[in-house]
Length: 257
Length: 257
Image (cartoon, rainbow over all chains, first blue to last red):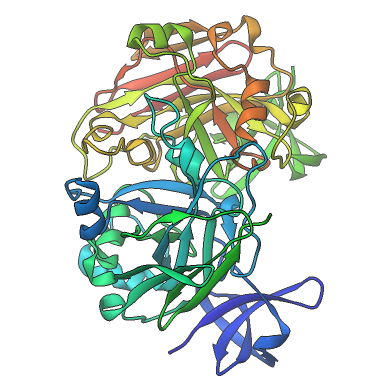
């Protein structure tokens, strides 16, 4: 299966390429518009991975798994429920998660599947949605949990989830990934905390793209985080979270002390 | 007072410049990084105005006026309450507002003051916030009101306010604008519906920039909509809304039939 990464090599050189057996086939141009191989091949070991794309926004779903809805005793929604995490929240694998200087409370991980949009779209018919999905990635939808209900009149989803480094995506984008039999597995300091089947989604990726594209225009590189399931928990300062989806890879980050 | 606009002249030529007495002094480069005059001068009448900048996001505040908080019987917040309207929602003066094909319900106007960020910033001290404000504009924060509370468990702020053309900004950006004595006046088909003093804000612009920048990194061209006050109402298909702030100008749009 093809896998695309973005990376930094040397001190400042940012590039992208197709990863195969530990070797990066460097490409140029636009990942979402017929990128061309340069002929250069790098070793995976000699680069630092970055977030695999630069979304203009991350659309993050809430309450999209039957198991979590049942645990929270919430009805499943009739339309995807979402908020936006800004472009400035994006963080790649291996980068430090940073506690906001103004916030001393609980910081929570949520392992998720991410859809990466390949083509600008709005009002996409369900049958056409697959054409607009470039591939899939892992997401850690990090949340400053104590801000969420700080104000009794307004749930602060954007504020709680929009901090720098709270939109963790990667390590790669895998086109054609078959999510139907896959699981999301999240570990905290190596101990498994989430292990749930993507088949339990309320809205599946093609439905999500179709329905969300009625509300927002989606741009190439935008990421839709499909929501999480049971096992969410808090990350202590210095702890490491890894979100793994077999066939995509492992997204690992440590909350800076 | 200096006023900056973006425009289209001819069929496709997009530019920006300083507007003075009906004449546009065309500039080149980056509006937020020492733009240079080209020497060319256009007549205001010969161009089509566009949104005056291209924000990566609009941060839209809720419950930021004492009068509206009192009317809604809500306590004023202790920190700005906000959502994000995506870059794809942005719309300029004169452009048609478009009803989402999937939505037949009430569409609501909210006349507001908009802060235009001039420099990338996070965790800005209150005393430094003014340095990061490029200027001010008018905002019509359009909302598909019936979506907001469609789901009992999740207020759909982003969905209700994020549609294409629902982030209306313009007609110009005015650096150094003194909002303290200014009013927002919104008319619907020429009839005044809002007329409220900006002095009634709970959080003033410099406080907003400082506090929001603790939560999100703000980028040059990002717009913060300061929230609305009393007089919000619905726009029938074919009706025109104009948001006026004396010293900035009038932002006029018609909801397409």
